Length: 524
Image 1 (cartoon, helix red, strand yellow):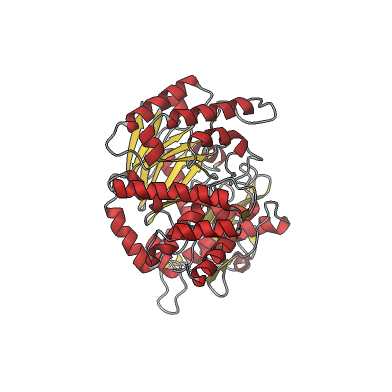
Image 2 (cartoon, rainbow, N blue to C red):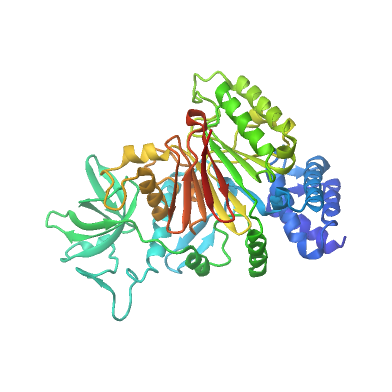
């Protein structure tokens, strides 16, 4: 291997926060020797992604963890060569992205450009981080709305509504002005029982007439300032959406989703491979209570069924909660839950085809073991999972939410009981003019807000410095909303959204084919 490749490997590992010992570097170079020159970058990125899912004790890598990952990857590659139709052929196309490594971008309203945050982000932010959270959410939507022809400022022939110009006015400019105006702001309760709209310039008390909103929701409102200083709203709604392709075109070269930037040639190649991935399927289950015998029996039934199909699923996604009792100060079942994870590992290992050709992803639920209830949640602790990994060493334990890059598709998975909390927190009952389905209202809300959890921080705490991990911009292809409510699927503005239901309560789950975004609502 040339010195150029050696330097490239060291640089790539350093960018991910790793240092390589001599033996580990030799192991990486040996692994890369199995690939042609035009595939070295992809192979190296795949190796780094797999290393990230290991519970490493140090950022200084010796030979052992690198050899472990290299062996697994080479075994998978050999299986693909032996059986090209196997679902293992998609292993290199599937990348799980932890929320805590998603790049953070901030919008500059003066230069009209996103710039990436560099350096480490502390978990415990200072007071300014909370203000920055709201500012970043507002500017993310404001730059999107500013490109909408209905609200953009034009030099000539400005578009108008029935009441006048659609140009968005800063709230500060409403003082002393008469007539109808459009404003954009965040709903805030600055005083008990009094709601305000805030932007970056000021806040104004307002009265709403209709809508489906909670505190922290960003809205566009048309109305008129009254003599008492209250903004009387006539029309109010969510900021308009922007096509994913348009967003990607405006900010090409920026990796909002995580997982790296693809060249045009790489995108075309993956799109071609994706067309042939018609057999790839994800099986997604939510509320998998490992301390419940009936749940384990149902899980055994599902594994037996998929073990005997012609092409096994590419991925099994198990979403929490993994215990029927919530984790709190009175929780005394951690050691028994560790044993239950070990039993699950044995169950999966007894299904040879699934163990060899499927991947297994675990996402914690809102009541699972963890340092806090704030979002995003870190992966399940190693103490719980190490028994399981003895049987299924290539299992992935990721954050909640987490992201999947599958060929050209962007998929977001989020486990939270959002529907109950949104309905409990909404200021006004949702309108039934277009739909009376609460799940459809929920989907529309999070997509328009470009955020997975637009609830007040008093209802659902969020780690201030990692709020960007819950952003939905540009809009992904698929959003999985694990919820204890009724199983549902809904396609909105080109985005496929579904809730697999509560597996432990009603035996429901989803079989999802990402190639054509087909959702199969299933139940035992």
